[in-house]
Length: 253
Image 1: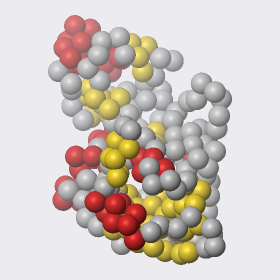
Image 2: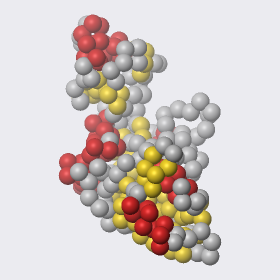
Image 3: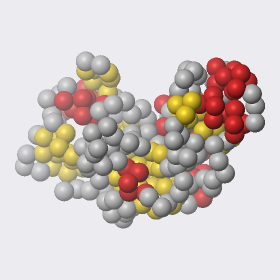
């Protein structure tokens, strides 16, 4: 059940309501990896990962780190007002209060991390840590040499800027083209808007890796636990400011 955040912090943090409000105002409280400083914000201690000074306070729970192959047709959120399928439907029974790390569009698919560790999520998804995400993208038509150069220099569109790293041509079909690319900042529909600015529609978009962690042979809709080495690798990327990702195998049809 949702209730005001200061009430939750007061109860689980064993402090007065006024002290809880001060802590929130100082930016010491996060919900699902996001710092909350606005009074009146509501959260659900049974579902949300609430932390004070980086420590989980909402309840005792074991940290869970999952790699999910999100299919198309799922919303990357905990709940959807339009009653569309949400990614948490795919990880039921895998752990308490799991939430997605970052976003992956409804029409996109591929690697999505799920966790109940807000600090981990913040280090992976925030642009300042520079953790690279690699995608394979099938676009309508073929890229000209001039368009490839424009992409490398960066393409501006109405509400943003798209400059992929390590752009590679993967496979040509009669009417479409597979490319692979990396970005470290995942603004809403950035890849789709960037190619649309060059008048190429994105027909399929698959995230195949975050850092050095790839999809491998995982099937759509399935998940697995990250290994200790994979978790350490992702956190190392966040401390190093990001590196170029080696392109793992991914869909090519």
